[in-house]
Image (tube, rainbow, N blue to C red; front, side, top):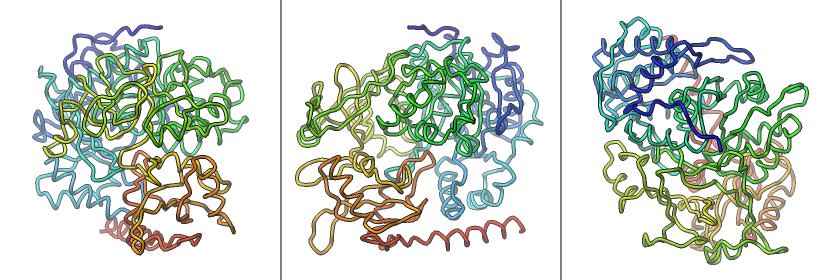
Length: 585
């Protein structure tokens, strides 16, 4: 296995990392930003340090001090990078926030931004001019929050950083809210460096590697895994925007080829999208043999995605062993377990009746109904993983329970939320809320505690039932399952909400049959809705709790095959009118 080399081992903070990188590799190209199909601008470590130092000086000139929170709402751009690392040089705490993702929810976004500004007591919000109409609300509500653009921050004098301790807060990252209210994950510089060093040691990262990423910078995989970690290990980094990838997934593969990239990362949906949407004509002549690490994480990993992606691009030089499933969460900085380079994805089928009914992981015999799972690898160095039951007692290998984590990467806590922190870190370990088991030293993820669906004493996971709804005409990623209490009979019912642009007679029963055949569980109700109805977080996770609330409140009017009647169009029109009226004002 390739061993890691080249990281600034003496660094105690990310400010130290940036300073050391500028001193060690000042003339080496680090960051290249793409726009559509070509590189737009490029910066050496030295040039980037100067930009970050000016941003730090400008922040300091606006009264931002060590420990102050800096809200950042910016796209993938040099503005984001220099603002983020400028805050770190100053000893301030960057708080990256996602931009508005749906025009019909602009009002909700503005209200959420007000809450986050109040909770963090941030002194400044750095954003683009387009965001100003939305940003004015938090400014007016708080009274002390000031606004600035990246262009304004470039006018500051270079800041000369002073040393501070690794126990200082280095990043405040708000969870995506797939199971409830957003919480601010408080990570120290020591947390961040511990995880980055552990990841690099497993992957054998070094200056001869090169990374390609289109991941959003407000999410931990994109920010920590594919921005901060490359800085630490000295990797040249080639970045595109998420929108450029979504509009044309082939760009991702072409960037890997053009830059002889060795490392990339993405969630399951992106690998699936590339396998389905990339045409041969778009990638003619490319060679992906340089890629040795294609990390997959941040959401459940579908075995079919692994097979589809590795099979689709095998003739273009992609090694199946480069596809490396991983598991992590923001509360452990980024990563918990990784598959090792050259191992590829481990896929096993487990006896569904024993796993769902008794919580025992037993390999499925031929002809047995199986639950096929992808291994997410072994714990990183310094990370300890345990599986516990409802009483917090450790379970042996092959038994399903809650995944708990210990180690130096575990968060300091949820920002100013002692109650949530106490629950998450009870007993001196991080309770992830994820269910899984360990077999042969490898971790397998079964689902979320809160997403369990119980039928006749058996536990089913929402993700399994959703994946089993393999019916033509349904949107990929457009199926959600939850349970709800039926008021007349007082029993739990299983509801499937499926997005389709082409509903047809009998489609509901097709979905039921597909789920029954794959899992043995028959849903009570199937609701067909229009595309983009199912609510998702900024990172693409289904918000089942919100969908369940809509259903129980009668906002999903289409039942037993009728189209859902969420007020999407009216929200959109109102949001557009409000947005443009404020711009004019």
